[in-house]
Amino acid sequence: MEIITLNVGSSSLRAGVVRWVGDDASTAFERVGSLDDATAILAALEAYEHTHESVLAVAHRVVHAGRMTARAEVLDEALEREIERATPLAPHHNPAALRVINLARQCFPRLPQVAAFDSAFHATLPLRSAVYPLPYAWFERGVRRLGFHGLSHAYASRRAAKLLRRPPSETNAIVCHLGSGASLCAVAGGCSVDTTMGYTPLEGLMMGTRSGSLDPGILFHALREGAAPERLEQIVDTESGFAGLAGRSNVREVLEAASAGEERACLAVDVYVHRLRREMAAMLASLTHVHALVFTGGVGEHAPSIRERACRGFETVGWTIDAAANEGSATDDRDVAAASSRTRIFVIHAREDIEMARATRDLLAPQRRGSVPGDSATPART
Image (cartoon, rainbow, N blue to C red; front, side, top):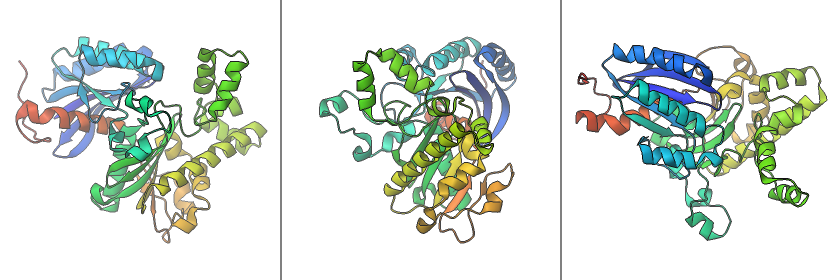
């Protein structure tokens, strides 16, 4: 069985084909480019699909549906309208996703199109984590913590359990998805029980261009001073975080500038690490025990100095990083914890594509074949 995956960012497209043999997944095809390359990338996938009858469906990463979603859903006109209505809550991602969904319908008219939601993994959040201390009527209208990066958190926590040789249902982990966008997740027994992003992807950690959590009184003050709501949204979404403090949003560039002693870059990194450590402690408070601390995403995987500073001082709770292993350049998922560490510390490559394919397989495979997910017998299309 094979599933086409289309992971759309605000300006990027990571496309591929995930092949399933039993419960083992591998990459059969991969293309990465900008949204301007979408037509060419989809044409290459279309050529692949014409010669591979085992392709089951097309999976799309969708950031925001405007509501909590517990699983992937087949895309239809009604669902696409929901995604479009939620655009103000994910203005950079939803329009791009809808554009690629439309292109994919044209390229693959016989295949089901499936939305794999970034928030679905967080459907297990307990109410104490999901509910904001606002008037209860707001919660009844759907204003609650939804959480994002769920595809990454789900894959990384499952992969950590495998590395520990434990069942996911018996594994607790804190997953740090650190990239241009960033969030943490506390995972208990394979289920999300707390996370840093909220009703929108603006809450939580400091990010490349987003402020993360801040005192709402700052925004009210700016409104009283005459700032337009649209301008404030632009500031906290695209002109804050590393971009606001260091003048550049690329974290690698900021780290290099900080190493060279640039004052604003040093300040930006200090603020980032402080807020990261604070939220790591908050995730710890949601778990009775932590078997694994996981770093994933572009920064999590490729910035050893951030990992080292994030773990510094947590030795008392059992998180001790090995300096040599942390600085290593191995390409495989790896354990960078010291031998004395009570908690294993993993660097795991982000594989949202595999999680998208898993969610799509679990949704469609039984009804398409009348068999269990992972069965390799796929009827030929006519």
